Each structure stands twice: as C-alpha cells, then as structure tokens.
Image (cartoon, rainbow, N blue to C red; front, side, top):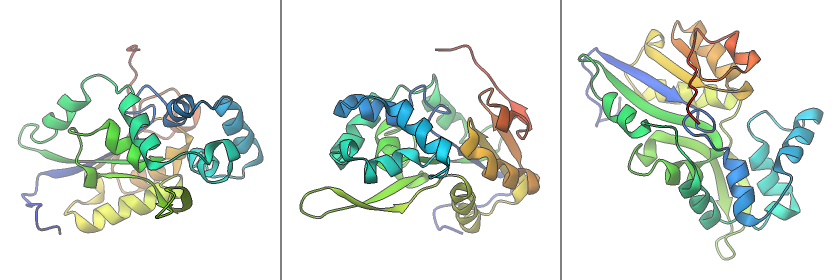
Length: 220
C-alpha cells in the first residue's frame, strides 16, 4: 500500500477513460488541427479496417509512423491538452469523490490518449501521478518521438488497472470503471468478473451490452 494512502475500509477505486468520456474532443482531432494535418478520421478508419493497431492505440501509431505526424513534439501534446474541451463539472466531480457519505473514491484516469495531453487537460483537477496515458520516448536533442513506452489500450488498460489494485487496499467489488468506446471492452469485462461496477457514457453498441449501467447526457 502507498504510504500516502490511509485505509479506512470505505475506499473505492474509480477509473475513467479520457477521450469522449471526460472530454468532448478526441485528442487526435485536436492534435491534428494544431499541427495542420487533415484526414485524421480517415486514417483511423483505415487502421481499424485492417486491424493493424489495437483499438485506441491508433493515434500513437500515427505519431510514430505517419510522416505528417512525425513533426509532433512534447510541446504540441501539451498545447493540444490545453485545447481539449472537458465535460461539465469534472473538477467538481473530482472534489466530491473525496468524501461521498463517508466513502472515498481514488480517482484515476487510464487512457490511450498521450499522457502529456491528458495531464495538460486535467491540470489542477487530477494529480499527474493519477493519470496513465500513452507514454513516448523522446530524442534527447531533437525532441522527436523515437518509440512508445506504453499504450493503455485494450488489454493494456487491464494491466494498468491491476497495477493500481496492487498498490491500493481495494477489493475487486469496489472498483468502478467508466468508458465510452470499443477500447474499453477488455477492462469492462475484467471489472465485471471482479464484481465491480462498469458504466458506459455512450451508446457504443459494443460496451452498452457489457456495461452494467449507461449514463447519457444531452450536453454539447
């Protein structure tokens, strides 16, 4: 157990996806607009069609392999995060989770979006060490992205969740996972198996059949 976490027996672990779950904007679209690259949706659809990349990891693949995205540097990711439009009351949610009728929720974000984007978007709301996104390795001199250290997409989200569980005094039935897309299928099935709670925040047909609850909003 981490030294800064006090166990009282009333703790829960809340893990959320980022793109389209906590935000309205997709990180890839915002980043593409920032660097002046068009056709992001078409590129993602092409990768999805040939099943070359695990769902959710498409942006990481483009940044590493697509010539037009090779110009991306850390500062672009940070700026893209500042341009992300968050859903309403995310800050209030983070504050409320500290004590709900005497229950505390440890709030973590696990997403395939670049970690720098998420940290920049949620700065001052979610601590940086509670955010697990795609991690890149950068060239020390040029700042160019050289390789991918980790992509929490698909089963990768399960691996991160289990690492969190190992460091927190939380049983499986005290885990809540919130997501919106196909890349959340593996982790939702895993949480269901642990008797935790899964919540879908979209009408994606793949996860609405798996999630135990669906919460939709007409906010735009």
